Each structure stands twice: as structure tokens, then as C-alpha cells.
Image (cartoon, rainbow, N blue to C red; front, side, top):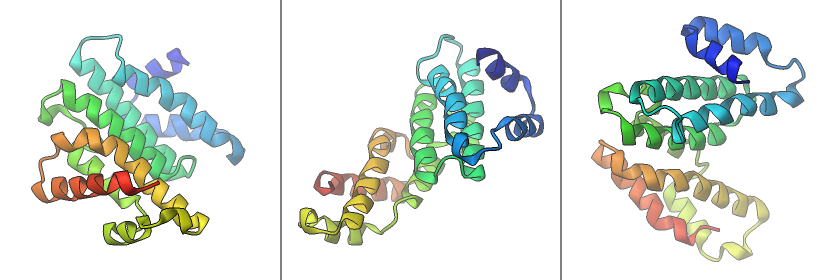
Length: 181
């Protein structure tokens, strides 16, 4: 797999897209695992890099983010899974790079907006459902749990957000998080 990753890193965006799309399994039931087999080691190269060179880590981060985005586009990975993984990548890049060097898909404000967009209900509805959540229907509990899962990485990323309104929105969600299942 390492050779494939190095090969992918050397390709331009169009060739990388073609490489990935032509090699993904035809069997849709196998696609999620195939994409995850690519994404996991890419993520590790960003969050636990072997190379201390920030530019190299950023190249791997960009590759990881574009690969995740394509996996979402193909339907192999859902938007929430991609948002969470992208948030962790964004946090790792924010810690090592100047804001101007961060790939657009990993810019903290962009990532936070995409993550919040995966939450299936607004904050007021979530707060209302959180009251006595144990007595709610299973689907409501799942929806609340999915919202809480999105908030984990955002709790780490909030300090890197530039947009004051977005930061306030994320913090408001984070205040609600302890009441969610």
C-alpha cells in the first residue's frame, strides 16, 4: 500500500482522481473498506508523521483530504465520517502550518461548517430532544448520538476558528454536548 500512496502523492489532481476511481472495487459492498484502507495510512502520515518537514506533512494532508472527499462523493463513505476524519486532519495541520499553507479542504472554518452541516437537526431541536433522551424513540437517540459524535473533533478545533459567529455556534453546540447521549 505504501507504494500506492507514494504514487498517488506524485499525481496531479485529475490523474489522482482517475487513479482512485478506476481502482475502486466494482462491488459497492467492498468500496468503503477499500477507501478506508487508503485513508487510514494517509491520516497516520498527517497525525503521526514520520517526516518532521511541515511541507511534506501538508502534502500528505492534502492527499488525505481530497481522497476523503472523493470517497464521500462516490458514496463509499458518508458525509459525517468524512467530516470527522477531515476535522482531525485539520487539527493536525493547524498545529504545524501557517494558515496560508493549509489546503482549502482542511481550513478549520471550512471543516467546522461542513461538520455542523452533517448534524441532522438544529441546536434548539437537539436541546429539546436531549431532555429525557432515555425516553425517546431509538431513531431520536441515534440522531442525538450522531450529533455528539460530530462535536468531538470540533471541541479540539474550536480554538483554531477565525469566524467569530462560527466559533460561537460551535461553542454553543459543545455546551450542549454533555446532555446528549
